Image 1 (cartoon, helix red, strand yellow):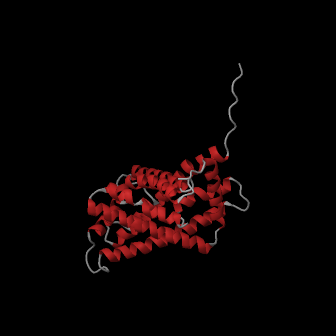
Image 2: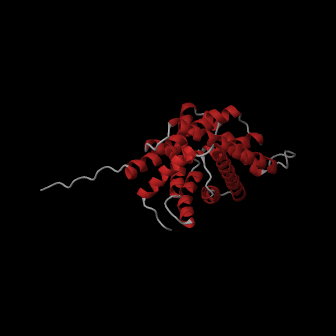
Image 3: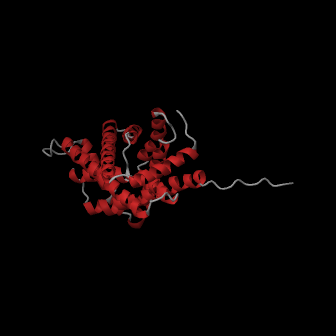
Length: 272
């Protein structure tokens, strides 16, 4: 594992943020679509493992395979650009504006959602034989996930909304750590090892990831989950997106930037 020093990989983070702001609409949408689809397949894989083994830890251990693959192929998740793109503005890179960042976020959201929705439809067809029979055990499990993580929060009112927001924040603290971890090494094995740990942690802890949820909840609705589209948007997706923005930018992007790109002057030793 060829280790890259923090001062070097933080520069890579800023460069990556600038690159994403100026990326063409076509490339942004294609990369976001593929990222959403691959992460959705990994989520379906993990749920299947959980159902078949009865061991949630087994699914969490193997879920990061999708995250590692999509980042090694250069695709983009909404949670990653939440953290990287603003750094280019904070670093005052020429031509980078707030509207450019919002444009990037909007395109990546649309691409991720389209990719996740595609896989949601494909999985719904698979677990129901083309909607000809009732969902199998995996389909039933996905439906219950959607109910528990919408109506379950709604049942607690403001406390449930706060819990949802904090889970979204913690999620992108870990996911963005995984994004940055890929820049800590110049070898494929080093990147994979560094990415695997934080992604496994977020999935096992049940934190809320806006792109994974773009698969789980539409799937749940297609498979007869007892919740509505508005339940999904108000009691999951919107607060999760907000929590993901705050968590990734505050605990990963700004902390690394402030101490490694804009390091404070060293203290002067006291004289006798």
